[in-house]
Amino acid sequence: MSGRTAYDAIDRYASIAASIAAAQPSEADELRASEPGNVVERLHPRRLSLKVTDVIAETPTTTTLRMASTGPGLPPFLAGQYVNLFIELDGTRTSRPYAISSAPTEHDHYDLTVREVTRGFVSPHLVRRVRPGDTFTSTGPMGEFFHNPLFHSDRLMFLAGGSGVAPARSMIRDIADRGAASRLYLVYGSKVPGDIIFRDELDELARAHDTINVAHVISEPDHGWDGRTGFITGDLIAELAGSQLHRTTYYLCGPPAMYDFCLGELQRLGVARRRVRYEANGPPAAPGRLHDWPRLLEPATTVVVNVDGRGKFEAPCGEPLLNSLERAGYQLEVGCRSGHCSLCRVKILSGAVVSGPEARIRRSDEWTGHTHACTAFPVTDVSVQL
Image (cartoon, rainbow, N blue to C red; front, side):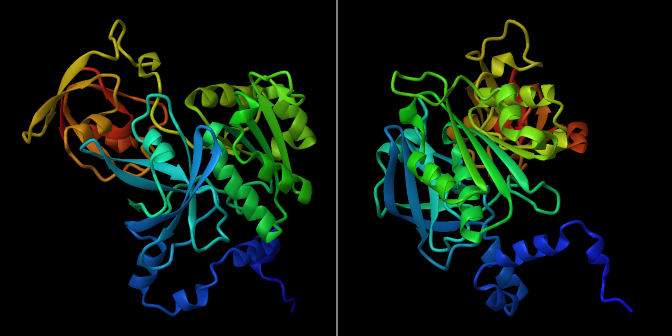
């Protein structure tokens, strides 16, 4: 009788099992011996209390905040996941999701890399004013933007723009730290060379590991730049992927304008949609261009939002409903702010909203009138149930 099992029929099962075992936290045995409730709370806490231990200037507009737990140890995470950071500014309680840019093998801290957004509300404060010793509350690690060896290829290409390189850095460092067999090609687009975040570190990791490659692409090069220029086009993707074009798993993270362009280029190349994973980086930046947006309606037009008899306020059509509710003092449970996690789900009792394409609204929610407040824009007076 042979010693083979049903698992041996699964392609690459042995290497995948070994990879998963190597990625387990060092306290795994202790956790397994704990009470189930304690394990769940340790691995999936609803809230974390974090203290800034270091502020690292990456570029003139980008800062990495290194954060440690003020209580029990930090829960483990998968490279590519994020935490939702809560903050109160000018009397408004709000939050923003930030990818963890440190490696999962670094158990004592999370690195959150923040790029300042022009006319932004939260990012200028985090980049310019936060100091070591400041404390924050966040969610535990969240999100599905990670490499799953059971379903994804072991050849990865990460298409990043701006601060979208943060989860790529975590994936690259994870591969380097574990000596994983996965091969990753980072294609990183920036406006000018001075905007490249982690440039020296990424280049050094690529030189030190033959499983890691990095290509910088500059859209507005100066006279001293002798690397690739332009945008992350299908031709460039095909050149770098070579014969593995249709066997590669693609990860996409960057400014909203980058998504439609890169997704279109991958589609033009015939890459199967199931091989493309993307992390939406907030709601649509130009809601007036959405397919369902009413003709002649200006995003600056104000409407009345009635909160199920609890009060009402005016809000601009071009602001996500979640942001307007927070400004008016209403607090919702929230995670991704990109239409994925559904924690900010509300019911539209009357009136109309337009949702961005990022929103993963279930068919049953459409039947019952529910939507995700973070990507819903009120285009008429609306009444909502929180």
